[in-house]
Length: 231
Image (cartoon, rainbow, N blue to C red; front, side, top):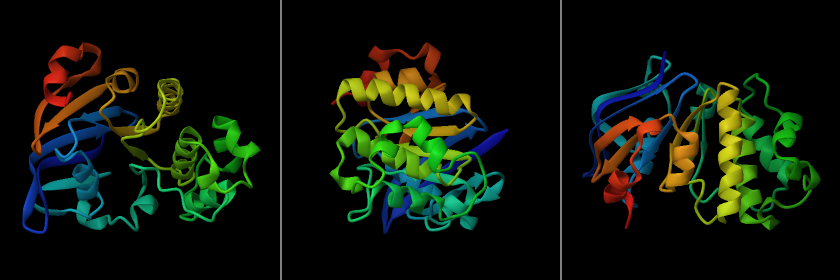
């Protein structure tokens, strides 16, 4: 069953067209990655789904409902949770309070403070610590935990490996595979080949706002992808 679909989407910021007839699908329980260099439109895919970037042609649907029914401020209530690039931990709030923000949409499900802390024990240990006082890797755990607190059907992660040490990226990959095993659909926007290869089942490559390649991650050719992604 298709959970999220973009069908020949053209998306704009003002009069600047960023996406050109982009078609992408994420199935229920599926793990999909979008790769590409900086500035090719990867984040705009997310922003188009959330109504931040303007869709002038094509169609976006989530659970079969048109994209017009979803906006960035109602996305979590609709079942889409985003772990944004740069994590965006709220300054002045503790770990516990940052997690509580994710739960504010009141969607039922398995994810709550205890289950998130079972996934990331450091969050319980540092529950009363300011979220921004933690390391980059710990803040990424907090950002993912905050998104999970909304009990999403689809978890979107925008460049989650950015600024993290390789050993932390390995831990992140293990976590995302565990989430996928629990039937959480994942859309991973990433440039790290290793993370994509370990997590994703399928991938799309964007170049200049257009999908130039797609396929199964199992048959992914690193050399072929690098011509689109490597700087």
